Image (tube, rainbow, N blue to C red; front, side, top):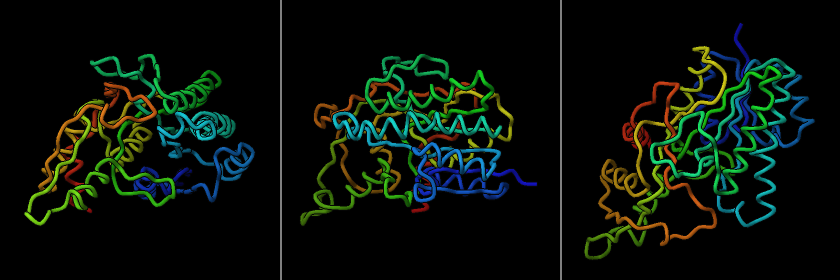
Length: 298
């Protein structure tokens, strides 16, 4: 008998890949906001009680980092989705003796450690988005003493096939590709192209959604101990280094110039160095190799 997996947020960038990976060997029930609003605790309890899933995967997230920094309404929403809802899911998971998988972020760290961050390092977020992600982690971990079976997977800079949900954001690479194709960066009358300024700061790791979906499945099937895991593709870089690699692989002749973050001021502070170290699992392939595959499928 196949195990039943409930995937929440299946129309998002990661959710779609999770469905593809799990539907081969599992009975998948996929829900998005239209089918289940995870901020409604009573609805969550009822849905999980009726479905009786063996595994619950929460791919729902509020990720408008800058919006929730200054806007009280947006911050309240971020706390509901990222902070409170995971706790309600954890309670429902525990009641039904299931396994919960939840995704968190490198932004729970302050970015001051240039050696990178291990799973057991102390979080210290420097923006409100990071605070809400840490709230969610703690809400889940608080139930571990009562027997909750959970995996918290921290990741960063997701990219991959675009999601179908209204809230699905284009990845950094998608944005760069569009900038490289459209004016003022397209070829001018003299055949030359203007350059793109990209921040040469904020060192971290990229993560290809098909790869993290596979890692999620393997995490369960290999019976890894419950707890926190870091899953990112191998290699680290700045935004500038990533953009430069992208245009080289795609063979798009756009000049990319490194600039400091001061040129593009944003409401939320970003960690300067938030590399997640894969100390418990074998790291997935290099992000450059994943990017090549992504571009070949576009």
